Length: 154
Image (cartoon, rainbow, N blue to C red; front, top):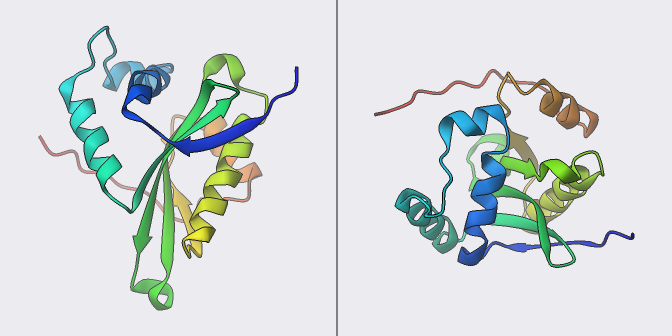
């Protein structure tokens, strides 16, 4: 079977599929919730993302099936002589499709998207517990150049 991947901006109707991908691993299961009814917070977040021109919630399709997703943010910056950065987050490939180079294809498409908007730096974060993800990004040329930090506000 030949795979022909395409990407597009996510629609509200895709939200349940995207959230299902976020809960497919141990980290996602501990911090996300998925059921017949989506938490309204997901709907509110989708509306904010969708209405912001610097945000692009990407879905990758193989035919008509959504097989992967990532969230892209274009960030103008004063550093690096007024550079524009592309932030890649929430990278997920459906578990049954992992190992088929879909993630590699998606990251290349994300980088091309960023370049088309003037990005000269691409950055992402990955949880330190995701050792396979770190190896994946390193194989694509990413370097662990900074130490990320978070402060969760309640």
